[in-house]
Structure formats: structure tokens, C-alpha cells
Length: 249
Length: 179
Image 1: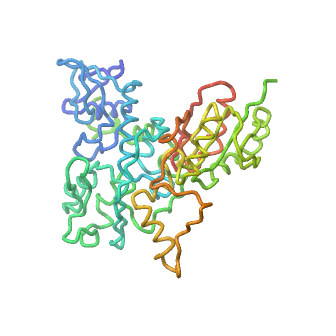
Image 2: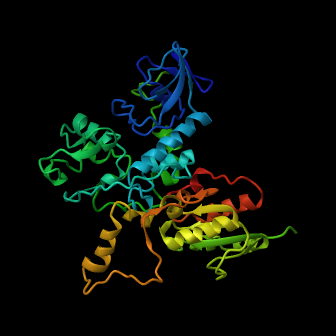
Image 3: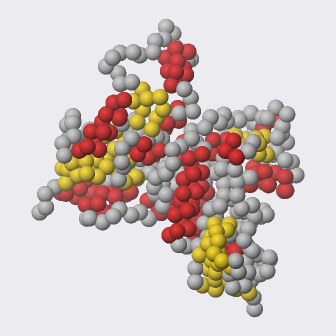
């Protein structure tokens, strides 16, 4: 027997300590998300997983990846209002960088692109910034294309928490915040990043690219070419039947 | 039989890839031609737009002539459609937007590898380049947007067949692509 909260009118079981997003994924319910990664501490920065929650203090908007599940909490997620907000957030992420999908080798494996398509984003929405962000091809095994960074900080978190290397950090504040490489020269070749690092595989967009494997899987046969990100996320989510899932049963 | 709808198409700062994708609807072209006739378009070589029901525009705006043609289309077409990545966001030509126009011209025509005795073209017949490349909706009202480089034949067909049937065009997830 476990506690439940209400997600879009249905009861969802949770284990105390779980976030609304974690419990929803366990229950096979998709809430769109981008900077959340099950292996890392929730970050709450991209806001794509925002839901409307009605708790003791009245109705408010909260990131479901950091919102603790509570018994009786009423959560709205799959509503036109919330998906409209999410479409706007995706458009803003596209507008801030240079996300030119036709020339990106991550196309089809990119979470931002897949999220846009799944949410039905058809327009630019905002005037694009077209920032000037030179690439870093210094490393023999990696190409860094900063044009596509969405500041999710997954590479930072992976490099510090898992690899214990601190290869990636953010610099600047507000609109000038950007990803940099933590070496004296600022170039990736002068770090100890390795192909086997967690940071090398965690980028949801096309910033951290392994050289010489870009088109090993052709466009059309990639992760989100086969299934929308909503279906893929549920396939990847833990199940209550898994022994170490952490899901409510 | 109802009167056929008039359709105009053009490529501004585009590569004609979206037009190729339209031709890729293959035998469905016969069905399309039962319902539409083409006005100004590379398919007819008509030079100026008459009154039209639908205008399909590929490519963004990179020079003064693009803006002129876009305004003619907006004036003539009841429904204006931005077709493809370049029309929707600026696309490939807009990849020059983080550089100055002077730097682009000088790299291409004066200082680039292999250029000798270079000269920046300055014939009065040439349309003036815009300082930055713009998507269509920054200059005129656009009624529908079809992303993709190019939008697939199936996406274009779904859009046109919905529109011809009087339905609001709608797309399943697999018909929406940005590459």
C-alpha cells in the first residue's frame, strides 16, 4: 500500500521522497522533460516539466522533477495550457542557440528536436539570436559545438559527480551564461576527458560529439526516428516490477 | 466540380529542395491537379502573381528582391505558407547572421582561398543583400508554417489535402521534422 497523488485526474502511487516526475514515469505516465536524467540529481532548470499543482497553498506552477510527491496533491500536466507553455520554452531554447537541424549529426538522437516535434512546435516563435559561438575541434576524439548548448548542465553534473574530472563548467550570468571547458587554455584537448566518460555520452543535444561515429547510424534509423520521445521516455522509465526501480508497487 | 484553387509557389533564399519535395508526392500530383491550377511558379514560369488562393514560399529573405517577391505573394494570396526550414527560421542562409555582411562578402570575393584579383559584385542589376537573413514572418503575416529541410512529400501532401478538403491542417508527430 502506498500513498497517491492525482495526475490529470488519475491516482498515481509514489514512494515518499520521489518527485512528481519520478512517480509519474514509474506509473507509465509521461510528463515532457529535458534536463532531467534519472541518474542525476534533479536540476529544475529547463522548466519543460512544469506542471500546475494544487496543494495546501493553492494552485501554483512547479517543475515536476523537483516537486516532491505528496498524498492528495492534484497535478495538471497533459493540458493545452501546460503544453502551450512547454512549446514556448522549446521555442526559446531554439531561439537562443544556433540549432540548425539539417546540418547536425545529432539529428534524430536529439532530445530538444524530438521534444519540439512531439509537442507539435511548427514555428520559430521568437526572433533567433544567431549567437557567435566558435566550435572546439582540438581534441582528437571529440568535437564540441557550443552552438547547440541548452545549459542543461548534464555534462557538468556527469563530469563532476561520476567522472570526478570537472571538465565542463558554466561561465557568465543571465543571458550571457555559457558552457566552457575547464582547462588553462579553455580547449578540450587540454583536459583529461576520455571516450569512456559519462560526460561523453550524456549530452541530450549536439554539443559533445564523438568523432568518426557521427553517421554510423543513418538518419531515419535513430532513436527518435523510430518512436516519439514520449513513448521512448516511458520505455526507458523504471517499472514497479523491477527489483531496484525505486517505484511504488 | 468546384472551381479549381489557384496556387502560386516560389523559392526565395532557398535551394528548390522544397519544390523537389512537392514533386516527390509523385502520382498524387494528378490528384492535386484535379483540384488546383498553378499561377506564378517555377513550374509555369509565370513571372508575376495574379489573385491566388494559396501561396507556397520556400526560402527566407536574404536580399531586397526576396522581400519584394514576398510582398507580392502576400498581396495576391489568401493563404500564405512558409514552406521549409529557411522560410520558417532563416535556415542555412541565416547561418551567416553571426557574421557581418562586409566580412562575408570580403571572405568570398576578396580574401578567401583561391581568390585572385577579387572584386565584390556591384552590378546595379543585382539585388542588394540584406544585412541579416530573415524568416518570412518577420516581414509579412504568414498563415501556416511547415518546418523541415525539406518538409517530406507526405507532410506537404497532408497539408495540401487537409487544406483542399477544408480542414485545419494537422500533423502526427512523424510528419513534423526539422531536418
